[in-house]
Image (cartoon, rainbow, N blue to C red; front, side, top):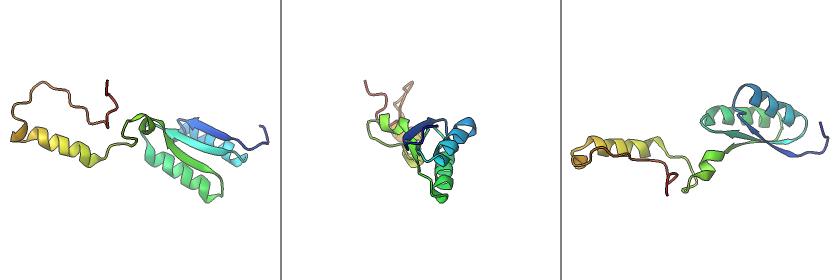
Length: 107
């Protein structure tokens, strides 16, 4: 490996081969951005374990950056929508697709 420190964006690094690659790169002195799609907890755990060893690693969520609101939705935001749809207030709504996704499907 090149001995010049660089930043590596490792996809799928929350587990398996991606985690091994992120660990290897961090141990070689590189800064690691751990890209994840759905498993934030595992990515956070991997980065925390690397940082505990004084290595540089940060979780990076590519999907959240693409969402117009710039973040992932919270469980309670989905729950509010479900509660509304289950209530009498939505009695006249039928056959609709309701996206609770921070505007990610805006067209």
